[in-house]
Structures are given as C-alpha cells and as structure tokens.
Amino acid sequence: MTAADSLVYHVGSFKVNVIQRQVVTPEQTINVRPKTFSLLLVFLQNPSLVLQKEFLLNQVWDDVCVEDQVLVQSIRELRQLFAPLDVIQTHPRKGYAWVFSVEKVDQNSEILPAQKPAGFLSTTSKAAVTLGVIVLCALGVFLFKHGASESGGKNIITVLPVENRTEGSTLMWVRLGIMDQLIQSLQSSPHVQVFDVPYVLHLLDVAGGNMNDRVQLANRIFEISGSSVVVDLELAGSVNDYRLLYRLFTPTGQTSGVIMENQLDKVVEDLAKVIAAKTDARLDLSHLNKEFNSNLVAEAWDKWGLGQTDAAIVLLKTAVTLEPDNFLAYQLLIESEQIQERWTQSINDAKNIIATAGQQQNDRAHVFYYLLARAEFALGDIEQAQKNLLIAKDLAEREFDSLYQAYITSLRGDIAQQRGGLDEAEGLYRKAMGHHQSIACPIGVSVTRLKLIDLYSRQKRNDLLVEQMNQLKELIAKHKLPIELPNVVVN
Image 1 (cartoon, rainbow, N blue to C red):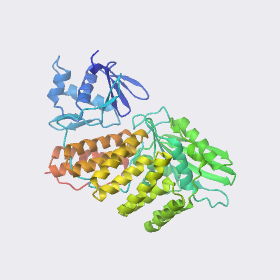
Image 2: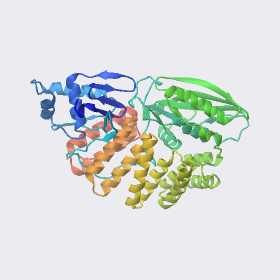
Image 3: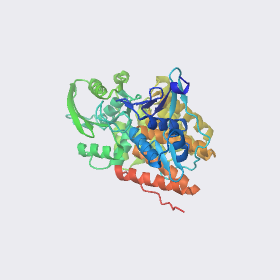
C-alpha cells in the first residue's frame, strides 16, 4: 500500500477513504463507481486548480476512448454525491475546479492541510454589500437525528425568544435569559451547531412577519436560512410553579411537550436534555446555577426593535456595569456600538469582556476576539487585527463553531486583499464559503459570491462573473433572500 492509499480526505462532514474507495457520511457508507472515484481523487489531489477536460479524460479514461459526455455524467454523479455542498465549479471553455475545502488525513497520523496549488485563482476587494453586524447565515435541514440534511449531516439548532405568560410576573428577562441559558447548555460539536442569541435576533429581523404566529415564523426561518430545527418556547404558571410549553419545529413537522418544575434552571436543564437526546448535542449545565435575570437586556432589545439605538446602548452599558460577566449583554453592546461605528469604544468593551472570559474559560471568547479584530481592522490597525483573528480562529475551531469560522476566515480574506495578497485572499474567501456551505448557509454563501462578483467585475473576468451571478440568482430565488443583485456590466 502506498502512502497515498493510506489517506482519508475530509470534505465537510464527508470522508473519502482511498484504500476502500468509499465515501462515508454520518448516515451511510457509499460505494462509488471505479471511474467516478478515480475522477474524485484527481480533483481532491488538485484542489482549486482549473483542470482541463482533456487532462481529466487522460487521467481517468486513459485505457479507453470516451466522449466528453462520460466526463459530464461522472461530474454530475460527484455533485449529487456531495450535495448540498457546492464542490465542483464549471469554468466555461476551460474545465472544472474542486472549490470546497479539503483536509487530508493519514490514517496513522494527524490531519495535514491540503497543499495550495500553484495555479490557485487570485482575488481582490472587500464585499460590495454589508448585511448588518453579523452576516446572517444559518443552519442546515435535517430530520431529527437520522434524517437527510442539507448541511452534510450536521444537526443545527435555532432557539426563539421565550413567550412570557407567567401570572402577574415582571420577569421580562426570561425572553432572552432562558433562551440564552438553553443555547449555552447545548454545545456545538462536529455534528451539531447551536447559534447564539445575537445571530437569532438578526435572523428575526430579516424574517419579518408576525412574531405572534410562531408556525408562520418558523416556516419563514426555514425558508430564508435552511434551518434544521426551530425551538419555540412559552413560559406559563407562577413563581415556584412553572410550566414550559415547547415545540420543536423541523421542515417536515413538529413535536411538542410540557415541562413542569418549581425552579427555572431546572426547567432549562430538562428541556436541554430533551433537545440533546434528539440532536446529539453535547450538554454543559455548569452555568445554570448562575441565573441570568437582566431585565435591562430585554428592555434594550425592545428599544433596538423600535430603532432607538442610543437608548439601547445606554441600557446595555448599565447592564454590563451591574453584571460585568454578563456575556450576552456585552456581545449585544459591542455589536450595537459597531453598527454606530463607535470603533474605539467597542475595542475597549471587547478587551474588558475578553479578560473576564479568559478568567472564566468561557466558550464565547472567540466571538469577542473576532469583534475586537473587526474594530481594529476598521481603524486600520491591521497587524493587531490579524493577531486577534488567529486567536479567534483557534478558539472557534476548538468550539466547533462553523458560523464564526466563516466570519473569521472572511475577515482574514479582507485583510489579505487590502495588503495585496490576492491569491491568499482568494483562498480565504473560498474557505469561508466552504464553512458557510457546511452549515447550509445561503446568506453567507451569497455574501461571499458578492465578493467574488465584485472581484471578477473589476478584473473583467466575464465567464466567472456570469457564473457567480447565475448562482447568486438561484440562491436568492430559492430562499427568498433580502439581497439585491449588484448592478454590474459584462464587457
């Protein structure tokens, strides 16, 4: 057996076993036709290179004379095999390129980074469009635990704000507080992605519609994001006699139930166990003995929804002064400041919460390093931004947070582009797209395509420009995304 035979290639959640000539997913092992598998290996050994049709035919079908249609059919098989990942890109009149990130693993050693080919395409420019503080992207479709998934088998969870119907209660904080506690209890892993509160709030802004019609809201979230499961919660009862009604929506149906407890942290714990059992999420219940009870944060969210940004920031500043370790309040504060372009203040606040997160070994640290780096980049401190992004990258990988890995990688691409490293920027943008695609993230993929469209327009690379425009149109139509097509001229 050669060294090449001992390799296993990782493509998102797919594994390509060279010696057994199989593709393995979390749900099944797939035997691939010999010639199609040989073609797959040629692509994996030459990631991102545009390979001419003649080269592919000579490499795979050197023992027989075949028509081009045989190659087209085999490429179609590979695209179907790795769906919904966008793995192979067609370059009209030139050939094909494998565009999804690849990791190669020796069965007797650790993961090795795939080699960057000498002919890797160049890139440039910042995004033409910015969609809020955090690029909205989301989730993948799955049927609980064993169903099909657009995110390559990854279970992805969105928790909605809680409807508070407790009797005579002033517990306004439970809308975001219980939501945040539940999210923190369900840990991301290689097979599960759990999105944080700020992301969900941005998603709700884009979804629009009637917040009181939860079925319609869940359907809209599935439509614009490809979400796997939407958790809808309603808290009723009274103090020391709580009843939590929950509904777990999937694209094909829903399950529901009631949890009755005399303590709110026990309510969250019981529900977290229910969701974990259905999705294989890891549980971390260590924070539940510290109750989140900030009405200020909930009130700030209301102000933000009314467009009263300054008032929201004042409330959030008060919240973090009273609760210096309230990570959600800090994150909402920093994002609000960055929307207002208060970069220096957001840097100071990010540094404050990073110090606290480090002392508590909090799993949100990568988020704050990313926000810090974004502010530093906005102010032109490129060297420091780059250093903090590398820290954020390592922490996000440790937490299996594909969403923030995408954000971090994209910002690294912006830095590389600004410094003139066009090949490096191209690779980083495509890697960011791979992270978005791994969690079936149509908006994230769309924003990355906008960057490529802007690049190809500037460079007058019309064939690639047209291809990206067509793919973007398809995404917008399929998911009804609130994105406008750029006005570019094909010369």
